[in-house]
Amino acid sequence: MAQDLAYDRIMHTAIGFWSSKVLLSAVEIGVFGTLAAGPLDAASLRLRLGIHQRAARDFFDSLVTLGLLQRDDAGRYSNAPEAANFLDPARSSYIGGIIEMFNARLYGFWGSLTEALVTGEPQNEAKGGGDLFTSLRADPDRLEAFLRAMTGLSAPVADALAQVFPWRDVGSVIDVGSTQGCVPVRLALAHPHLSAGGFDLPEVGPSFCRYAETHGVSKRVRFIAGDFLRDELPPADALIMGMVLHDWDLATKIALIRKAHAALPSHGSLIVYEMLIDDERRAHLPGLLMSLNMLIETRGGFDFTGADCIGWMREAGFSEASVVPLSGAHSAVIGIK
Image 1 (cartoon, helix red, strand yellow):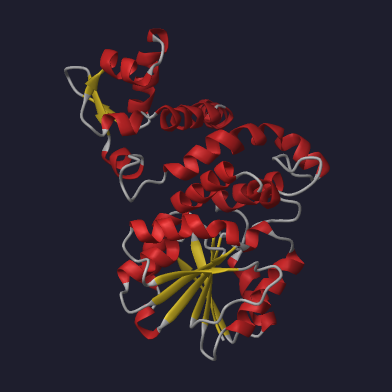
Image 2 (image 1 turned 180 degrees about the vertical axis):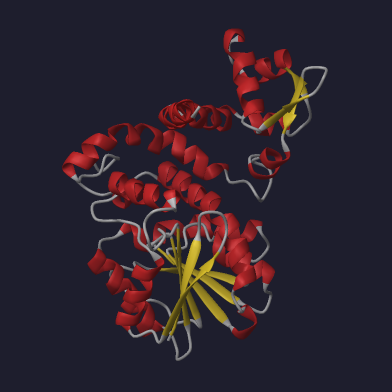
């Protein structure tokens, strides 16, 4: 029995990309958005999606088995509650932007993980020279897709952050590397007294402003154009760096934390959130896999433990620092100046 369980566990890991690709393709062809309008039988759903008859039943029933679709006694398919909430593009809780990016970019790049492990070089658009962010800035469509992806990744984290931090004691907050502005927008919606903003490259500004306007906070959430690698950070009572530090090598990580310390007032807060690796580096697989993703995507980036980040903050002059759980695989390190 133990041998059978071990075999099943190994095989489940080995073919994990099968299940992953079923979800990625379902988002790509619009399964969940189509079913948001109501249940459909297999034939009707297949025709709406434009997929071959041979593939349809196994594909839909795989999604049922994964818990993403439901099938009633009449054979009609509908979105499972979780899929209805997170995978319907019409909902503000939609996280499919990041799944779209996983499908369009990372799924193929991860096929070159072995090469990355041997060479230490990125395997994305920057392969052979350049870097990810330069290539994204050169293509407005791909940049917009990347910004949407970051919104999908950040939305549940932003909602958690709105609850766990004492925002009543804060007047202003700036999200450094804000992309579309998901975090400052959701913080502003949850805490109307906050003056919120996002600091990012000028090319990001139009998408940020559209996102803020769509959510009715364009008068309260401002965009600040700049380059956090070259410019000083804008002052605020609290600064946020979400999924930013992991893109860079150690020297750049420390330099950014020092910049944050310089920009904050006394008793100001730096909030760093990531898929933190557990301090023992034994248990938190998402953080370790994200660090391998930084190998695929960047030239020097890596993920880190909460203890690592606390040490960097103390080295930069923060008097207090602690780890706070957020949503799912994400946690925050909060440093107090």
